[in-house]
Amino acid sequence: MRLVIQRVKYSKLFINNELRSQIDNGLVVLIGIEEADLHEDVLWCASKLCQMRIFSDIEGKMNLDIKQVNGEILLISQFTLHASTKKGNRPSYLKAARPDFAIHLYEAFINETGLLVGKPCKTGVFGANMQVELLNDGPVTITIDSKNKE
Image (cartoon, rainbow, N blue to C red):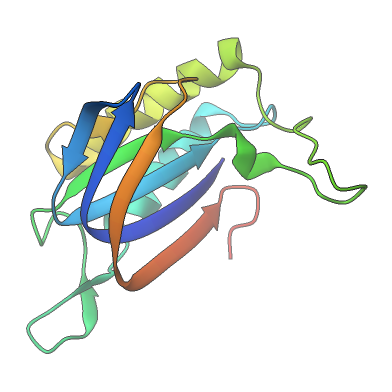
C-alpha cells in the first residue's frame, strides 16, 4: 500500500463538476493499493498516517499529529501510484490491484483511519474520475509505502 500525504489548508473534491467532499486544515491522502497488499498493510499505513507529527506546534516545529490539531482527512483512491515507468513512455499498472480486490482494502483503510482519529474521514468515490483542488501547506508532501518501511 502506498500513500502520498499532503498537509493542506483546505481541499475540495469534485465529481462531474459537483462538490463531493471538502476539508479545512488537515491531510489529503492519495491511496494506491497493489495486488500483494493485505489487511496488515492497511493497519500499518493507517497507524503511521494518524501518528505522523507533521503539524506545527506553538514554536513552529513539526511536532503535532492530526488528532492534536483537530484536523480533517480526505482519502482518495489512486491506482496510478503503482505505475511502473521502467520500460517505454506509457506507464504500466500491472502491480495495481484489481478494483474488486482494492475496494475492500480501501474501505478498510477508511474505517481504520476514522477509528484512529476519532471521527469520520471524507472520501472520494472509488474508481471515479475526480478533480481535487487543494492548498498545500508548507508545502509538506510525504510518501509512505508498506512494502518499503523506512
